[in-house]
Image 1 (cartoon, rainbow, N blue to C red):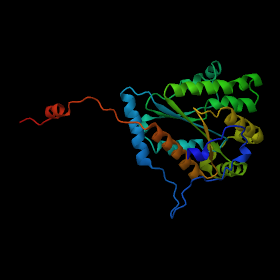
Image 2: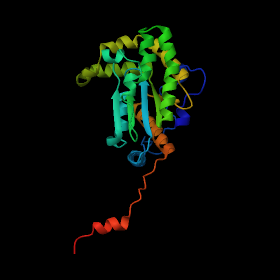
Image 3: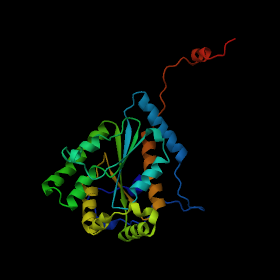
Image 4: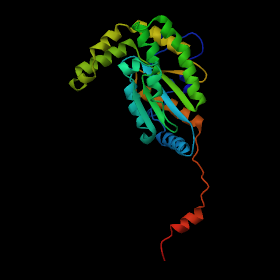
Length: 273
């Protein structure tokens, strides 16, 4: 899956990516999109167990995408496939006054996963080269410098044992319209509708340029980008699950083997005569 969805080095234009595509989707008799949840949980349990014995490795799943692309939906799916004890979800909203007073990476560093944990970022440090750029919230010289700062930051994370898995949820303009209308058609989903989403939609072309620059400028060997077609919700969830599965397989964690005297310990647990 990583090979199928990885962004190639060099110039990037989102126009070249089909949001309705389904690379590697099963085409068998039932065609169901199912992750190997049991094996994935087993791998995650080993990663968590490694950490209890001093292991330093963790994973941070970064998700970016336009409104309604499904970041929350993916987070729910991922939460259902791994050990919730060792998962940490963070949804990054508009920065608070306290956060704005700090370096833009300050609030990100506060939510980095500890060893053994899979951290899920619903939006991330990339907001500071996306929203900030599109809305001209800071001078160009400021957001322009952040691409290199982000690359250095992610290299630091990887060097310290955190695997950075970055997924861009690629949604079409027409599918976003349908999802926004679906929220308006269902009173139980009115709480999810924000008129500001329409203002952001009006800036669609500007966001496509900003997303393309993000994918091009911050696509590194140590932290590559993957573009996940997201018009089909079930495919989107399955594809991100497969990317996480492959990442865990590559880490290949193992249960610790402490030097226990098992026979002696069993003897102490023997029932009294």
